[in-house]
Image (cartoon, rainbow, N blue to C red):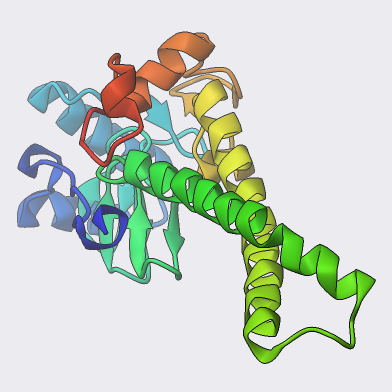
Length: 220
């Protein structure tokens, strides 16, 4: 439920541009170097922890929210907001997956796999019986057989998705960052920019306590 109900965490107020700053940027439309110089000055004046740039090498700005984007944040066109460490927008949870609920999302997928595996194990005998004697299966047992098939399908899908997200956690990349690798200002795209080693990467998302790591408790 937390993967669905926890609202996105938006960038702090200090990243928001004032109306005069926004007007200055608009006045420099078409002059990218001048716009970036304005943004560089704002970042330096406010001492903002902005170290990444966009694919054009400039400081990233959201034209919808009128903010300087914090590192690893993105704008969700579905939710209409920028959020910290956005991974993707999930239509199944009708919520963005990001810093606020990435752990909850992976825990949800993982326990879903366990649940489907439990159903498969407890109904496998009915599946085997169906193949041995397909004409002697009752209506009740056919329902269990149907449950076995559904659990197997959903289990495989969730296993693939959970494994992929575990892999991303292991290399400290978000789904969006796999399309465009992060890059430092003045640098080149780097797949390993945030990679702290597999142990620290998992600790960053799940925390250092294993007992809490598998529960829907915020430990990021």
